[in-house]
Image: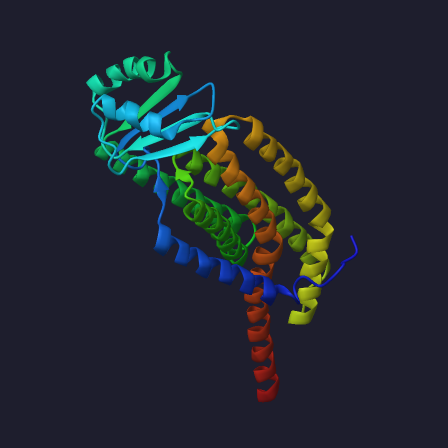
Length: 307
């Protein structure tokens, strides 16, 4: 594909944009924090499905009637018809309270309602949080090792920075929108990591192939080579992300409440992954490789002057 514009020459603007997003994300984390689900925070989570839009006051009264304190409790309305109530308690519901729930549903709504109760004690919540962090870190470490062996260490550094950029954007979006962070979110993050690095490796592989044809002696030639490589893989990158994005959007609207956070994270991560593979990873590699070329040129100049 013939280059439409010089991506590498404009890379400083893309890097500035990503830096601004990073700063905004830090501010969001500091102000809002995360809306942790019961997988990472001790307590109980009850999801109830209704045949009509949720009456939050009635739901609250129902739980109060079985002796559940509503202090620090959140009620979230979900579903395409706003007919699903997700109630999260900081305390663990006792067996007696859970057994009374069916009777309370009959008393307040006239029938048993489809519901699910998830309960996590403090120890399990802490262990799950630690394992989730380890999973992401181990995945990132193996990716760095693979790229360093398959390509070179500079490619690995550029690739992992782009990956962290994608994960950070998803985290910031969930913190800002108060979306619940649970185990499905971690699954989405690992999926995003795999997709993003795959797209990045395709671009890196094209750069490596072009390096076999043209041996850049200066930074300008290197920039032209990378820009050409990006445009040669542009159609593939765009077609891939659009195809997967269509599937993710359909899943978000029609896949049900239980996977909505997963697909929402996936949508953000897919867009961010395509952006970072093209506009972040490759320009970062050019910066690092360009410095090596400049150092090599200075050494050659110094030797020539000595002679």
